[in-house]
Image 1 (cartoon, rainbow, N blue to C red):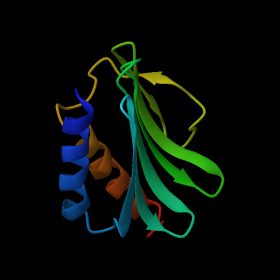
Image 2 (image 1 turned 90 degrees about the vertical axis):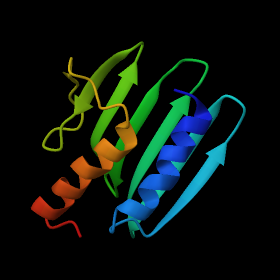
Image 3 (image 1 turned 120 degrees about the vertical axis):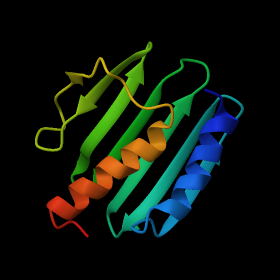
Length: 116
């Protein structure tokens, strides 16, 4: 994955998910951070480092990370909503469009837990 590919997926995602109010992008030559704001104190952050190959996706609330998925050294793990400090290996990984998959997972969590 390249920074441009990830940015393209994020720009596509912002129009496909009704709960995203605004988005912010910070970009350098080696990293990109995209923040999808859901509401006051609630957002999704996507971070990618070209140097390390790390991709991190997190639902963040006032108290910190609520749910997340990370790929480090080619291995995916999940931070479950009921215990976000845990690391659950996910050998199935993510789809070829991890941002879209993650936002779909977050949409379900938000609705099931009355967060929106």
